[in-house]
Image 1 (cartoon, protein in one colour):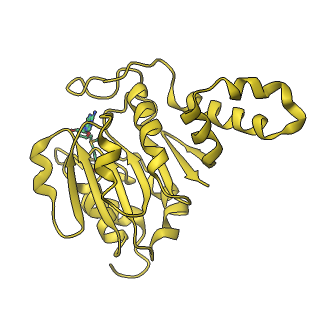
Image 2 (tube, helix red, strand yellow; image 1 turned 60 degrees about the vertical axis):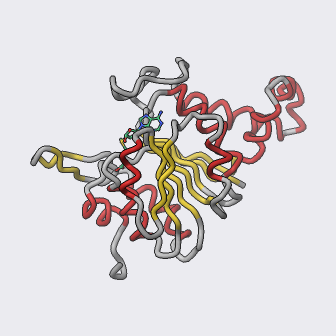
Length: 226
Ligand SMILES: C[S@@+](CC[C@H](N)C(=O)[O-])C[C@H]1O[C@@H](n2cnc3c(N)ncnc32)[C@H](O)[C@@H]1O
């Protein structure tokens, strides 16, 4: 990759809808424009040897973008569609799985130093939450977990990919709960709030205690792990 090429320029090159523009059926439209925000954080991983996981592959556009942006990283695409195994090439791996399958964390264990996970699949709030609760624990410290297209709703984005987990809580409210309760539970002066934290299941308490920050942008949320 030439020096000083931005992540958005690579998104445009490979035509992922994460970029500022996106071409579909010969028409160029505004893209989600997430990459200018992601680059604020994700550029710090550029020199690192790590594993990036993306849930939802479609044409493979974003997998190819990540491969070029991160010259030392392994890129793992996860998708329901078994035909997408054809996307495999040097440093691009494919796992055919539902993003909410309970054996997915074990399948990902064979990859070292997972530093970034991006959820870009069904976009159903319940699925986003299930995947986050399963996969945030296997993210390495200092890593990022990103959830896209938060506006899609309880039924997700695509009639052909109905939600596997029904949940009416919009993911950014769920994320705000994680941050609120963490803040007060760490503050000994506000001991009255501790029972709310204590009544949560242990794996959710552990997630809350390991969130370093959440950064909300239009349509997407970026978590960093402590
Ligand atoms: C928006 S596309 C991914 C686009 C790609 N990340 C990019 O930026 O170029 C959504 C993909 O999610 C996959 N998908 C939908 N529901 C899924 C689920 N529950 N588990 C895994 N993959 C799913 C679909 O097969 C489709 O390929």
